[in-house]
Image (tube, rainbow, N blue to C red; front, top):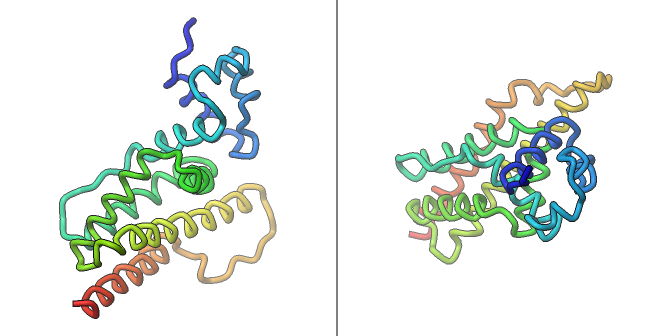
Length: 190
């Protein structure tokens, strides 16, 4: 059986969902696929490239939809959160891939968010930092949310503060603060 790149990514995604990022290794993946570790390096030069491909797989459902700049930012960030939550350690893996510059989909997502920021009136020189600020909020919020879910799943007796109730509403509130800040910054600069 010939090993295809998409098969490697699917198997890695399955391992991620089953065991988390800490247990997603090239050796374990090779065992799962019943190949030598060297066979994986035919498709990916290193683990970072593999994780970037898994990040792109996680982010596949995230797409820009028509609307004004606010709707595009809110929509993209909501989709990003949903995509991250749909995979064990999704926020951690995508964050690592972003930091390593390994996710092509994240590059496109940042460009779309930067375009929305520019449409809001943010200076083009600041569009990327605006986009990254919004993405960092989504990644941080979702990583915290996933950590709490993992603690709960493990049966840990952790006192949950009231502010952890209704994470979707809290996420929307925080994102609204950022969007309002973008609008205020744009009005101040005009």
